[in-house]
Image: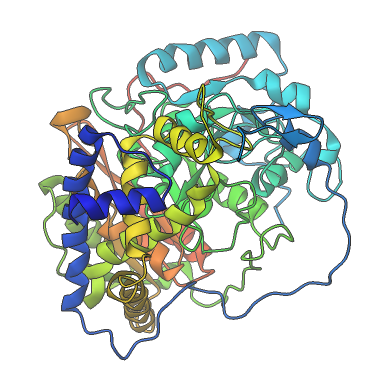
Length: 92
Length: 481
């Protein structure tokens, strides 16, 4: 992966990279991608992909209202709140 | 359900926090060891005492006053939620955050009377094999503090090996329970995928991971597993165990691998000796083949990193976790939070995961990895048609040294081939202490078909007749008053 691709990928992942970081990471990324390409050696064309090893079907349940006491507790972990709203910098 | 009978090794632990002289001896023992090994990110039994309330148990029943786990302390890896405790995942991103709720696995143990005493160190978000990727603390191996405890559940394994708790919970995405257990000379169970609810486990690679247990006693590990397991309405991938009920402990047939690739001499030697030992115990030993074994590591990392890139998207500094001092707009806030909050290994995995999922690359990497996953599952299906359990190394070396004297991050990844197979196939595996070489433990693992955990306990129990558990110097388990 060249530097340009690395920065495009980082931007898709909402990651900011310093130049030194980009240099160190691009080497590690390259090493892993080269290693991933080893999978080309094995013939898997006839196989179906496995997404979950044991899950055979979706599990469904009745759609009903249940109480959860968690909402307020979860809001306590927000860095900044106003009433029950989470404060972020201006969008516009 | 759990048996009522007491477990011998747990008797001395019971009520250790309730009796002042015993508690003082215990906490000073923990403090002494902690200076050397740093297994805990947070050791604070008092938090459990403050928050202990009956409504926290999953079925609304009050906390058990009797039973084998009642009043027994345990530790929890810091990527598993316990109400009132921190939930840092070993990351600056979540440093200082407190969990508002408790994982189902922990709640079930609490309902059986067990008491959380603290949260253990780990590689950041479970990403690593040494616990050196923790952004918050360095953890060392109780057998030799120049060495790593393994990872990512390194804190849990070190705490158990040093005798700080009789058992600890970990999570295993690609070997993160079994490898540190092997490095520290204790037992480590990775259950069948879905057998234990993942509710309250901070997600890294959802299709591969699960909560399991580290202990120095097989009976304890089995009791903890039996207490935690079962379907959970809060985790849709949880399943009810369906063991076949087949096979008997005395007559187990064990599959072994002839082509193991490069192994350190102490691992190769222990593996060969264990095969001879199993024969002496009357087990039948048969060679099997796993032709896909050489391709499991690239398949595993492609899938794990792809899932990680999606799962870790939630950490953006908005709703909780690290928030930068200042940002002009929401996008900059997210980028800065992630830049400052994540360590290099986490960034590497997010980048790679994002890359393999980009349009145009999916067939080449992600879909191919999932097909390799099918191939290793089929390898296991063929093998388990002939054998009851498979004996494999856990890791190609024993506990390596801290820092540059150890293995590089890339070498550590290549070394995951024996552990990631069970995660790709969703099957259970148990690592067990198989020997001690030059003062450092060597672990091996048994693997079994889905839901056959009891077969693993039976096989490891037989092996313990040959090699009973050893302890590092300075270990004590005498908590009598």
